[in-house]
Amino acid sequence: MKYHLWTIGCQMNEADSRHLGAQLEAIGYQPSSAAEDADLVVLNTCVVRQQAEDKAASRLGALRAVKEARPDMVLALMGCMVGLREAPALKRRFPFVDVFLPPSETAPLLDHLERTGRYDRDRLAETRERAVRDAIQDGEHILPALQRGSAVTAHVPVVLGCSHACTFCVIPYRRGAERSRPRREILDECRALAGQGIREVMLLGQIVDRYGMDRDGEGDLADLLRAVAGIEGLERVRFLTSHPNYMTDRILEAVAEEPRLCPQIEVPVQAGHDEVLARMRRGYTVGDYRRLVGRIRRILPGAAIHTDIIVGFPGETEAQFESTVDLVREIRWDKIHLAKYSERPKTLAARQMPDDVPADEKERRRKEIEAVQAGILAERHAAWTGRTVEVLAEDKARGRWRGRTPEGKLVFFEDPADRRGQVVRVRIRSAEAYKMMGEPEPGPGPNGREIPELVAAASAGG
Ligand code: SAH
Image 1 (tube, rainbow, N blue to C red):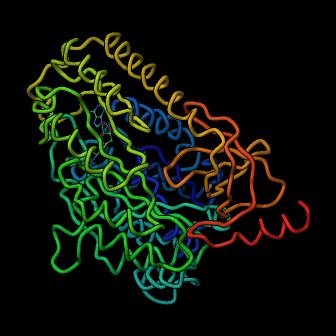
Image 2: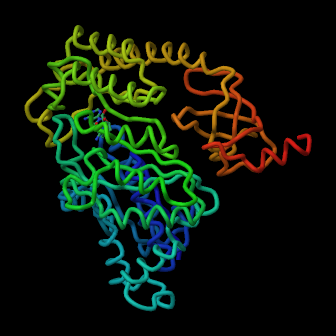
Image 3: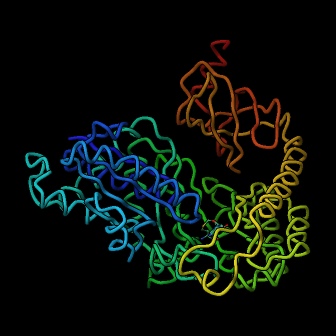
């Protein structure tokens, strides 16, 4: 039996797909890269903007013919398109879909497969829960087969859902209320991932810096980060996304003190004008955000600060937009995830604020910030030329290794040896806005340890 899994959207969706793939393999399914020859096809969807929703709907439309030709194939729709309450309406719109799965919930599909006898019963000694849990605990299926032996990084959800209700955002309606996962479960998962060769984990939450606030005795994100960083085999730990209001000095200090915690702080500002921020219900002012950046730079000099910005929010005037551009010039973020406002059903903005910035104006604003930011990064990155950085090699494409520095900067380098999963010292030869190129250089590795492969190469005269 074969399954095909198609995923779009955020890192949380990637993680949900990894969990589902691992569970399907635990009950006897094998991965297939083509929907056409799979017994089970799952689409894991995103609706954060209209564009993503349209993509999922068109993929689903294309699969209709496959399903009609092979009615035996199981077709499942998963993720934010389904949300917690949309299944009945979707069933009417796409009657050929067999099962609907809310985000992070795999049970409806496993139930369906069980009910319809599509399990490999030989593999299933006891109950499904037992099989899945054991498989994941012993690490055998923590990574789906397609990622085993090749994936270097993995996403691990630590806070599910979101209870913040920013006026533009559909996520709380689709992923439900905020809930932190138990610390033990997270640590087990990270240990199993490390056992499967994963070297870097990214801890995920819509507001990841609220980790633990809804649980007694689990500690906060700072405690969790330190614990994950202590897991043997893991070289790097990142986390995203942080809400500016919950970023504590404790978290920043943990990153400063523990070398395996990467100095990359993701704090979406969304807009650079107080009135827009108030209408978004973000809960902070531009001044608050500036003070946060000051705190990050004091505790973590050299850390990369990333942000998200939405242009063309309802009522955003030209002058308000220009304040955002000014803030881009002032903060000089290391990365900006830029989006044009997209009205989302049921959100407060959709109900109360007309989507009044014309599409071509949104595009102009997006382009303006993109151009300003490209200039800033080109200038800032020029200073990286000649530096030696530590790059975790993730994969090889067109003859070059690709990896990231602890700050999350993308670096390419040439090296005939197999560097996958290794931290390599790289001397930066050229640095542009969105990528850096360099060559490997022998010397001490992370935390002062020698990198054995490089030492061997150097002493062999290589
Ligand atoms: N939880 C995070 C971000 C989650 S969604 C936070 O608190 O900010 C990722 C990004 O998508 C958001 O930061 C926002 O910039 C963008 N986004 C969310 N809803 C959007 C919408 N309706 N239109 C355009 N961009 C949106």
